[in-house]
Image (cartoon, rainbow over all chains, first blue to last red; front, side, top):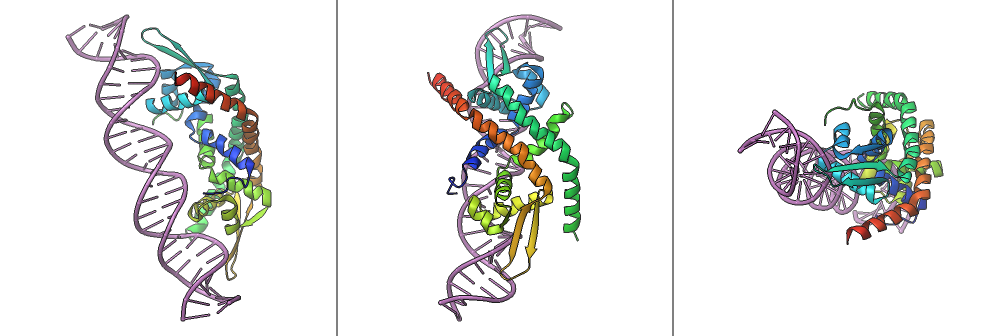
Length: 121
Length: 121
DNA sequence: CATAGTGGTTCCTCACATGTAACCAAGTCT
DNA sequence: AGACTTGGTTACATGTGAGGAACCACTATG
């Protein structure tokens, strides 16, 4: 509750994680990195995210300067989202996490099974 | 809600993030990486985490094979926690995230201020 | 005329994460 | 005898994340 001053790195990492932790943000970024540009409903359909959460997530990402929003005032409206340069650069550390996950997937699963088996005895 | 099969990477990344996302896990790992070995209450004091959450977090980390728990049945009890090899390797992608955060900290802050300023007009 | 599609916003609800406080056993210190 | 320490667990309260559904404006289409 008190003492954030123990570890400056922790504060920093905590901030990124609060951005990464909601997980929709990361999935949106991955989707945009893959397709380049996507419309609101394209994102919604491809991620299986609710309209509400997508709206909130995109707003935050735009505010943080990771995503750029382009609104075409046509009818029906057309809004396109794409990654900014900073958004692109964010993919590197994220894919590092993804790779680690891939490499250690089996070991984690094995550890869990061993743990669960040991506990129930 | 439906369709997890859209993107295999997303499933994977999602799993890591659900582990990383609770934010205490990562802080525990960082603390252990720094000090090598820590007792329960040492962790508690150095992180400012509640006893309950530390207990839950450590249990999860141990189950996933990232942290090793050593119990000395003395009185009063003494329990030591340290990173496993897999736990050590997890630091790399995490510090990659931390470095990204450090490098882009100012740009994000600037983007937020610009966004907030534009909105309130 | 009625319905669908687009990009949102708002209200209601519910589950889950997290914190607080109390309790435990066994021994040591005052 | 009573308080303190260590490592937890459990019950209770609370806030927030997240989903669902309804609504909006405007047009094209059936």
